Length: 92
Image (tube, rainbow, N blue to C red; front, side, top):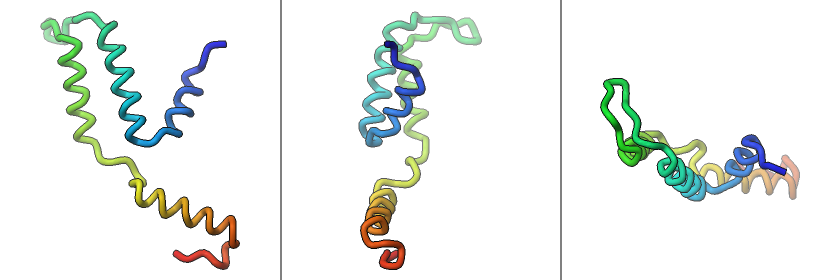
C-alpha cells in the first residue's frame, strides 16, 4: 500500500527541527539528481546544484520556527503538570 503525501507530512511534523532539516536535505539531494539543467526565464541554462544552493540560502534567511524549543519544552511541562495535578496546581 503506497504512503500518501498527507501521511508523510504528518510524520515529518513529529520530527525534531534538526531531523526535519535532514529530511529536507535528503529530499533535495534526491530531487537535484533527477532534475536536468533547464533554461530559466532568460533562456540561460541553470545547474540544479546552483538552484539547490540558492534554495539553502533562502532557507537561512527565514525566521526560526515558532515556538522555539525552549518555549515548546516549557509548554509541554506545564501541560503534563496540569494533566497530573489538575489546573489549580499549575505554576506559570
